[in-house]
Image (tube, rainbow, N blue to C red; front, side):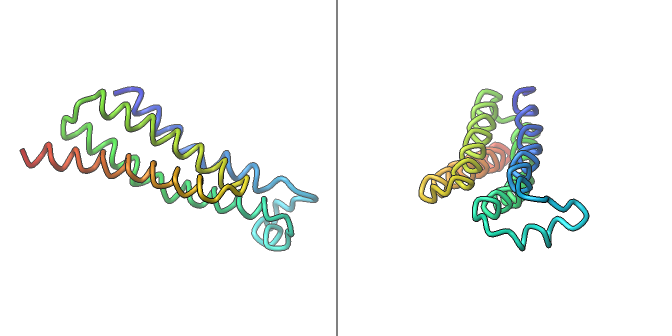
Length: 129
């Protein structure tokens, strides 16, 4: 189960990876970062910020799914596989978001969401049995 826990840590850190890209620009103003970002014309910075925010949104359901699956006694190999797949999908999601490859971004989002649903559904089914 430790790999799944490492995946939770990786997913928790992903928003901070994407914000590094969002704050790369001319004369970054750390005293007022939101106003600085709002004034930027580079769409890539705005997409990186959107990836940053979306990574935060995806984290809680994923962490809950892993912990639910573990608590319910879902087969550890399945939990590990889904956790690794989720992290891979979310890394791809951020890359595709920043590089503006919208179709692959959407597909990677769906893949990550499917992993979360599978984790939670497996836990629910295991508890119902």
